[in-house]
Length: 351
Image (cartoon, rainbow, N blue to C red; front, side, top):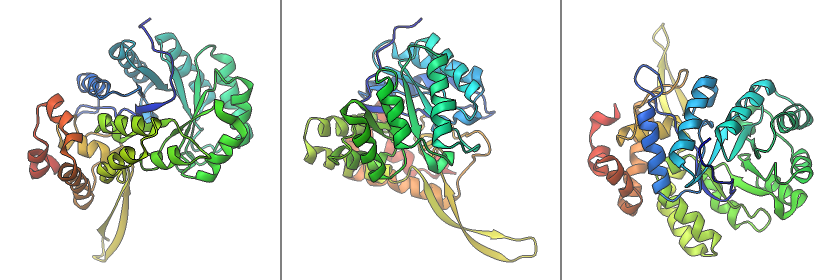
């Protein structure tokens, strides 16, 4: 078993994008390079096989390969929070046990998507069953009703945490509901670490005295791990002003975890219809990473290429960050041997 760093639910944990080759197989070389880039940026830990890593389309063999590579590259320098959730409790048990045996620091379990269990069922027939079946490894519930169509309630989260604070030390909160997060804090007390699951809400959650979030499981830390680590460290140290400055400088990126754009559909009879397309994580992220030369563009279907208008939103965000604070994107230049302004300006990289 590789050396493992104990789970620390604070700071920045990039939810790693999964690079694929053009034929849709894992690109392990690009993945290990991304891990090294994130670790060099000063992150607390890394998250393989989360939503950003396209976990619903990964086989369990691919899960094992990605988690194993993360543990090997991390080499005890940072933690590894393995995404092992499923909408099938037996699959979640298998994935969590595999992660435990490989040496992951903790496991991230998303609420069961599509089949829509109640909060009671989530606690009793999912989280508690995984806790009982897989010893020792800490579990982090991941509450994201916008994707899963269900939610572990604050009351059931409190039962899990207070029953065994060491096994359920944290929650990834992606409800977007600050009142819900304050209720989490009220019921669970200071022992529960609340981790932001929305990049653009991280500082709000850390600044809110009723929430007191301790960090973020981040999409955009794939691109700017150093900037976000500095932002969260500054806020944790009480430097609200500096944290806010960095947040504003990288704000254009934090706002485009999802991208909406207008386009036209032409029906077979020739009628033209205006529509709005919503491209969700990880499509905008991977579009930017591919444009900057960090990995290929391929996403597992049904995720696919964005419209030209949506791609321009991504380019504009990168331009804005480069113009305001180029130091946040320079680590990409150093790690990948590219020029950010040249890549952003060249249409060949964005078609």
